[in-house]
Length: 88
Image (cartoon, rainbow, N blue to C red; front, side, top):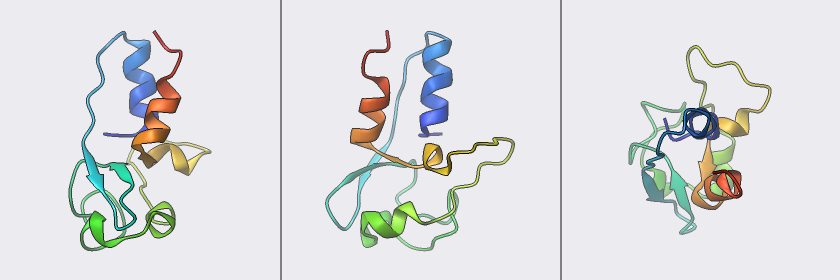
């Protein structure tokens, strides 16, 4: 959920994309479902308590999804929008 991989799959299915956004401590909009990290990452606490650099270094391993690009499992709203640019 809320990953570049899931957005790509949805585009391939011509499905709509919905994302959840929370601001981090730097004020950067982060695409992550929960306001806390425990369910989706190996971090603890609120997304809004972490700077982007620290959020990027957490493990967002998704069961059943293999990727050579761990960054595909975590993204900012700008990164998500950029990955969709030009896709119709």
